Image (tube, rainbow, N blue to C red; front, side, top):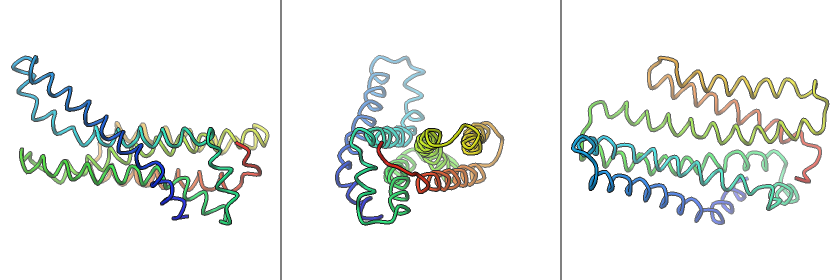
Length: 219
């Protein structure tokens, strides 16, 4: 499993770096434009806007993960991986952990950047703000994993009747609904992070279960 992850990072690591460069570059460009041509009020908001750079890095990590998972079918990656002398469960784990590692790397960089911003600006309640970065990373990861789960539900629908695929479809719809509710419910930062983390764990387990039950891997 970890060999597949390492090979994936070696092959697609450049995609992540390029995505970071574009994300940070666009963010800095917007800040520079506001600093030059913005109003006095816009310039006063620049320090607060700079604190959003970790979010830009996380979004760039999500974009890179979507790019890599989006090329899966074109490269016949799943079919190649299942031909390796590895248990199907390990192939499934590598498939769902790879985007999570992309987001984890982005999260580490985001915390480092945010720590530097805290040292310069010193906003109140830094622990809460770091938890906010964690929450954003977990929420973005959820949508990546939801896309993988959606693919597995589609594959299941091609093999079985509609009624047999009802429960997985209902579970996926419920997970998406819970993710939406978590974003609007009034709870503490730590509780919000815990809920999204549990939701991600459940969704990844669900995707793993569907993948190992596949009968064919022609797509």
